[in-house]
Length: 322
Image (cartoon, rainbow, N blue to C red):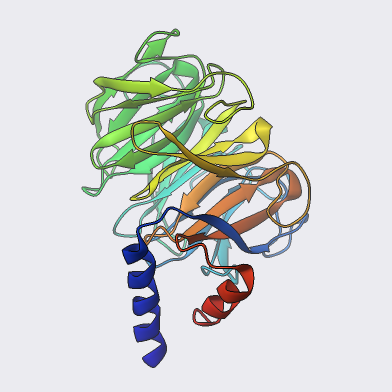
């Protein structure tokens, strides 16, 4: 009980400091393989309200969802290759609702499936097509506080949204390069009623109201600050918007209007390095960032240090989480 109190005090101190810091390497798990905690082609990641981490794997030999504690200890798994209930074909996206329901973008089967937190099958919706509630390569997912689900319908170049059981509520977007249009949308994130969508071909982020009214955009092709080379998964927190800048092998983060705030990562296999980071998810507090390091078949996670604590001191803080 005493440790829980100390954790709260540490969190308050960090927030009260008010100074922007950055994310420091904290740990990792995973390797190439088909065993528990191993990956063939990890794609999407989501953090549940209780802190558990869900990862979807699309490799032929390991098509499944695995879930872990916040520090990467294996808890369970479900799924196999196929088109039946609970089976997947090249799944890429995953999201967890505020009540713990797990939604999976079953990309190759052009549908969304949803499950209890332990993987028990609950239902599905979607078929191949361009009508309302149909999909062509659904990828990114995000759940709103009211339980509704927004889906990046990538090959249809649009966003569709549904209630928690899949009843169609609305859509926006079309193919093109203008405001509110997409070429190859991928990731989606939600912050205080605004939806942020990454477009990996146009190398930009656009953001919208909940019903799809265009608000703004930022980004262009390149490797400089605020530029992208195939932006993929996204996450949002009180501290800003985070983007997996996949082909630049880094994470960039921004204010809610797109002002550049920081970045981390480079190409490689070392701690804090990436080979095609595909997705990012944040803990509910925003202090831990989990990155799908797809090419290295692992998950890396990072601690949000707003105080500029030196690594040695940070290690002492880390001990409080054990």
